[in-house]
Length: 457
Image (cartoon, rainbow, N blue to C red; front, side):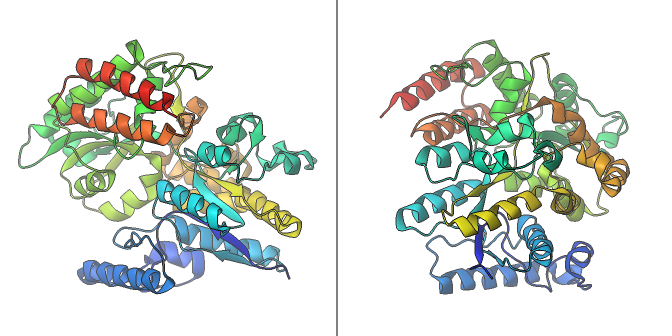
């Protein structure tokens, strides 16, 4: 047997069996018990303590609660995929490393491990971080593996999905899962303010107006929230939904300082002014939505499975498409991709088999059913019969599937200061949300700061 194939993943820390939810755990590993609702908060705190203790004993330099206090998503799915792969490939052992808390944390961990020679053999990384890893030169180019495949299309790969992780002509990753920005509605609140929960608005005017009516209910109610913080994914979505781009085709100058950027910022400003959008982190916004204190949440489709679990029967959740206002509109694909680091030829063969399996029908069906992510190949819904039934039985998921033709890459600015530029853009977006500056004032400042930061050496 080969030496174990180490795999870096991203997402939630593994939860104890007594905490992991019954319905999903039963499908993946046959367990059939879950902690009662009266003890759930206590159980989550205990699980967080265990996760922290394990990380401290392992000598990790970045300690988190492992997201044990909210529903798990990535780790259990990847454990199930690893089990299925090893059953079919008994000569290969997959060893999953403790998951990084976020895409950014996974990137920083990989950059540190590259220096000391401790990179995993395979890793799952956010699509927005693949360019940085490519620039650092640590990723194996997968073009030569693709060239040896007799039928790349049969693997579900095409220019659309491969292009999400292709830089400078190199195929430095294979996308694993796709998410798009969508709208989440508390249909009970929609009904309460006189809206039609069966005809949810799909344009910004309608969404903002509905959010304003929900905010007018008072009692700490917020009408609308857009995921503007953490990274520039939603900023890109807003700009490109109006037909714009963050940079020109040659990447010699930014391209959001004009009409497209102005209209994007105006949406954010109107959400804050009219619908009383609060300045919340993504986690805080999800908590507010689940608590019934946020009427409309514009966020990632990857939250679909968890929102159903968290809301339960408290209220009915509906979804809607992200508004687009141009024939040139595109929406950035969130999600993550598989990269190969190992330069050991024997391990490379095993790593490539694992990557193909993780992006193939068996693993992709597990991923779709247990998360809100979409498969990298939309045709999978037709080729895997049960998945077609799943989409028909879960109309909230179908919203994302219908927007897949608009998919484009999750942009990351070029150069060593690309991530810094993104952080500075988020700071300016926060000024609009906090209503400390007008959209027309922020746009030129944002443009100047981005240009200056990207030009720094």
